Structure formats: structure tokens, C-alpha cells
Amino acid sequence: VMRVDVENCCDPKLETLTTLDAEVKEFFECLEEELKKVNRFYRSKESEFLERGEILKKQLHILLDIKRLIHERYRKSPSSRVHSIPLSPRPVSLSRQGSEFS
Image 1 (tube, rainbow, N blue to C red):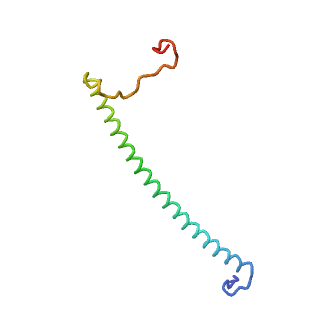
Image 2 (image 1 turned 30 degrees about the vertical axis):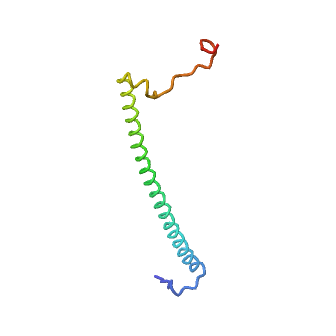
Image 3 (image 1 turned 45 degrees about the vertical axis):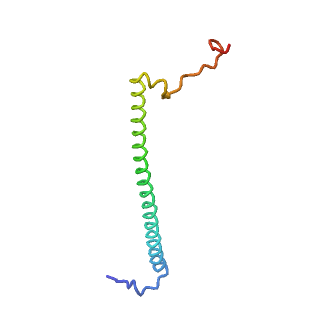
């Protein structure tokens, strides 16, 4: 069996492959670190947006509750109709037929 002394071998192809392997390994290690940075950034942004979404959802529920309470108060109290502003304005007809201005 013939043994080859790899460390003392002067084959430039083998030396080039070893150098390329080290460079490729270093390159992928750098890529891995950059990918980790990108993932951390997007995870933090995702957390921020999810938190903001929850805040907006809570605000929406509060506004809907207020709207419901105002609407119930408006329906129950006939005297409040004179002084209250309706939740939605009456539709305005743009046609001249039937208007008091014709």
C-alpha cells in the first residue's frame, strides 16, 4: 500500500483545492452571519407590527363600543334626538324632483 504524505505534497491542484475549501467555508460562514442579522431584523419588525396590530384592534373595539352606546342612547331617548347628532347623516338627493327648491 502506497501512502501519500499530504502535508508535504507539492501538488498545486491539491493546495488550491484546500485553499478554495477554506475560502468557501469562510464565505458561507459570513453568509450565515448576515442571514442571522436579516432574520433578527425581520423578527423584530414582525413583533412591532403584531403589537401595533393588537393596539389598533383594541382601539377599534373601543370605538365600536362607543358607537353602539351612542346609538342605543339615541334610540332610547326621544328628547335627545333634538340635541344629538345622528350617527349617519340622512342621504341627500341630488335630483330636483321633489325638492323644496324646485
